[in-house]
Image (cartoon, rainbow, N blue to C red):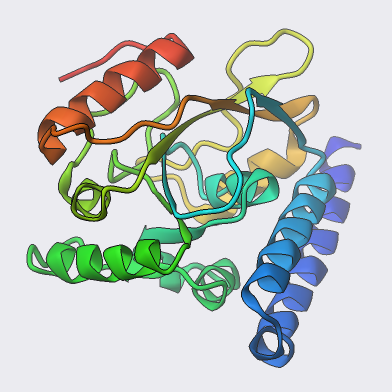
Length: 249
């Protein structure tokens, strides 16, 4: 029965993904910024519902931009979870483009992509981020640079934080956890690490019961004269404290 339920969920998710691709191709160009954000949020919420995933938000979400959101990274699902609560323009690794269907949706929604293997590409993306912040956008980055299993918080890469330093824009911390609704313990189904494939993670998520995503919203912070590395470490410590996670080197 669990496999049948998971198969039914995935069939509906596939239809939803295809519908999202159609919307981006046919409707997005005719919508203004606010309409796009509302559509992204509604689509993301529907996706979580189709996967049987509940969303809980702890704390008060910020309003309109300009704002740079920093979040820990656990799963391919993180972008949809954050968008369901707070639609953002994400800065993602270029590999995301290759994800079946999902990559096209992320790109079509306005994501900025960075080539992690090219050191100079970070400077290009920082300039783009600064432009978008000055234009009033909400941007979101995963400063760990890769996914973890949710049991600890990896070191933050400070490069992209330079966009907030240069524009004197605030940073909003959001801590993300996947938990079992009954026990409150960490749920590993959505994790996307190591040799796990996207399809394997998707199947585990579809098979899960009682799965919920929890967003822990921190206070907005500004650089206050700190350089990006000092600021990044302070933000990492604050997020680890909020999520009650250790800080490996």
